[in-house]
Image 1 (cartoon, rainbow, N blue to C red):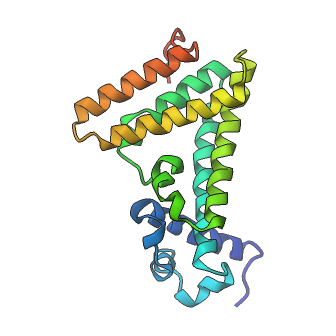
Image 2 (image 1 turned 90 degrees about the vertical axis):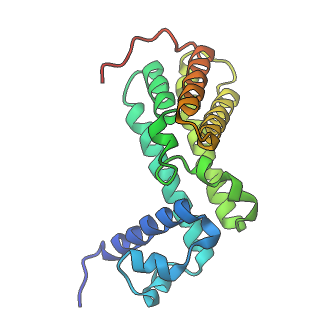
Length: 200
């Protein structure tokens, strides 16, 4: 059977989507290659046409997860810098994000697993986190903040910490209050709290 030139890449993408879902849902250590391949609609035997090992799969899936997270930032960044940052903070510190850890930021979802991951996966995680921090640093610098790189890392740490604590809170009322307070404090810290509401 002949396949078009993109067939192998499309198949790999299916496997990575399935692996990313499994990692978010069950954690990287409980991911089974057979289950991932089954979820992707493929046979277990086809795995080694795309990956040398489960470790390589996990690392590639983590990279894919960060690619997805970065696209969220890119959608926000189509607006002016201040509006982009405010909207990203609003999306990150939302109940929708809090309630969907399997679809959200991989830093918050996977950071507790990081010490037990293989070096290749830790490297993929670190590269993804740096990419997000670097993306946030650019508008912060253009808005006149000093040490934008350091500030961006601090902002990212605040976002991750706030969403993680909100997920630990069993009361939805208290979780909402926590996220609202964190968002307001962060917007104030970045001089974004006087922006008009986004009509979208």
